[in-house]
Amino acid sequence: MNLFLLSLLLLALADFATIQLLLLSARLTKNHVLEYYGRAIASFTALALCAIYGTLASLCLNVFGYGGLGQWTTARGFKWMMWFFTGVWFEVHDEKDWLSTTRPAILVGNHQTELDVLVLGHVFPPYCSVTAKKSLKYIPVLGWFMALSKTVFIERTSREQAVAAFAKAAEHMHSVKQSVFIFPEGTRSYYDHPDMLPFKKGACHLAVQAQVPLIPVVVANYSNVLNVKRKIFRQGTIPITILEPIDTRGKTKEDVDELLEVVRSRMLVELKKLTAHAREEGVALQKHEANNAAMTNGSSKASGVDTRYNAAA
Image (tube, rainbow, N blue to C red; front, top):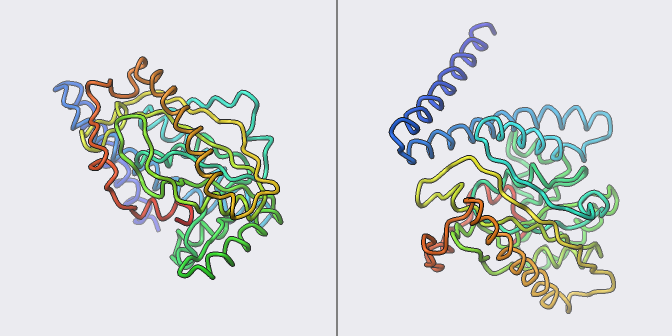
């Protein structure tokens, strides 16, 4: 045991030293690529530590009947750890406190990069979780954490199973008053201008099935804080706006297409407004710097992180 703990300590020290060396070298040489890799390693370190913490915290909370708080407490831990490790912060504007006063609900957010996992750390209200494919439930550690923290599992191998899964998820949301967060784009856009990929219908179908409101969560384009293509990763404060919830009471599956358009259009208007401010603050690339090749930006496929945090597509 002592040898194991010593090995962990040495690994942690080596990781810390690598991060600091990269960041120091980046400052001395003004090489943004070195800074990018330094902060990337720091981010993965924070994520790994929070995964361990989250599993243990969820287990303890489940014992006392508060399993629904597992993802909230893990997300909050990641929020502060990322601020300490990378200096990245999301400033949430929720003037009417929609996040805390609307439950259960479907939270929908625009999806830009891997950093969006940190968005969850800043906006997750208590008793909120992600959705995930049912198959992930059986993966060691990850599956345990997700099951213990009340993840809403959805199986979508066929249309019939999808309908049944949404009904079960809706029942689960009401029985434990659990909200869920969904990225309706289904994958990261990597856009360096204010735009979003087409929305998938899963979030709206689930909201209608459960008869719960949709809460749009709009994150400003932050392509000058993290830009994977350009190997940019800087510290910065990124604005988020929580829009007024959209009521779904009385709506049916025939209303899903219209509901989807309403949600996306409202989010896009706010995204453009937020990004104009983000450009003034140096958070987003300026118009003349931005790469407008939307076909290239939007061609990325969902990764393992997406699978964990996305809704049913």
